Length: 232
Image (cartoon, rainbow, N blue to C red; front, side, top):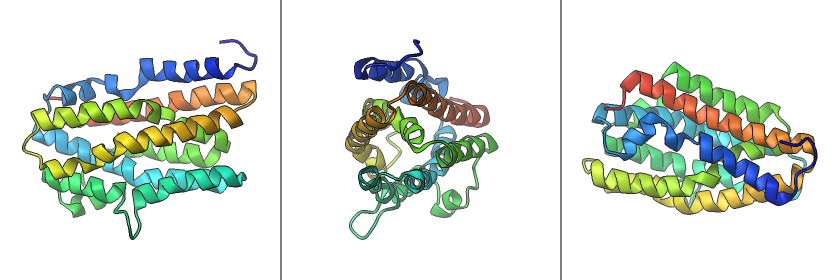
């Protein structure tokens, strides 16, 4: 990479290249999931541990808002908290994930009390929240750009669950269905913010490193889950 300021096209290419080589869809556990090779225990382990990530997404987004002095950005970003926490009109992603857990045979109490949470998953998620709290807000925004790669992942996941894990009530897959649309909207917003506000060579390189870090977080979570439950 050069040390000067990239044009917008090159900047986007450098960001997208990270997903091509490092997004967690390539992790062996994820591959096994999509190929239908996970046991019920392993799938429940993934759902239970991933819930810790899901419940911390609005915490991460609140940290970004707290650090951001730009009103226009805050007005765009704030819906993410309600998307997950919910409100009177929308149950939110956290509630939808709890229903996924119940469809897999996990109780709400098991999930809420983190009874199955692996230390490596806790460490990775906490590191991500701390990153959002301590990094310059445009860099923290850039770390969310794994959403660029999420819509295709969600479509593949829905098809895999419907084909291979028919013992799960289909209504439990609502979280994945809504994220196909939400992730595309969210990634468009985050990419526009990143391109506009990561406007120095230092910030651009920081954005790339932030997205690499986020991919490492997701990969580390799967490492811990894979170690605990295997993939078949």
